[in-house]
Length: 327
Image: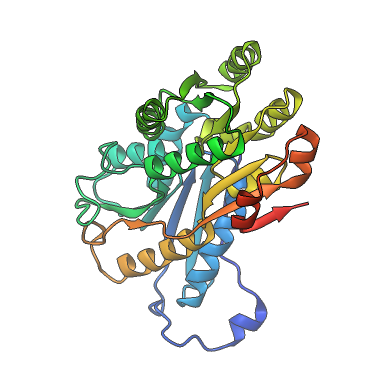
């Protein structure tokens, strides 16, 4: 588990320039807590975008302090990490891409505002009663998990049209992933496909999942953004390569790092928009009055180097729609 706390830094050029519309009150110190259930290496570029947007809005050093806590996919660590951030008396809690962490934060405090970024199915998982009026002390953004998962199933059929068996790496302890699994099961049945769910709640269970998949390799493997799986994504990518299984991911970096294909939201934009919400909250807006924003931009990333290693020809229709091709 990695943990760190740091003060928001700023390039000297920006520090010297006047910030039109600067929001920071003179002498006021803001404490912003950030919690990621995954590793910091995954969070770092997203957090950079978040910090840069806050700087544009006028939140500068040393009055703005970030406290970051990140696990390594160990969901059992989340309540303790939330407690640490609460004990630091943060003004806002920002939850990075984890419905489980958002639910834990909500259980831990009803007073500190929470901005949950890129979570899946906030209504279906019970995080909020309404996208438009979340109420309480929480708001944020959603990546439309079930709808986008159906899109990845469609991509799987385009990638391997002759295959009728699709595997989904799932986590029964993650309510957002459970909703995705439920939706994909229905969609697969309508398309006369067999969806095989392979559960992995931990690093040890991931090895068991690999064994189950290896016994009967699917036509395509679907991998979600579950924090436990993402903490070990290098192992997942290597496993798929070793067994020559085409895998579709919903994190852009997974395809850039050797996975075959990813269909993913523009997370950088979601974190910049999260900074706008933090600004509104620090100015006095109640989080529950801010609607959950929905991801509007999704990108298709195809790794041709991996396709070649798999001996797989990517259909021209997919290549034509790709936003990024890794060669």
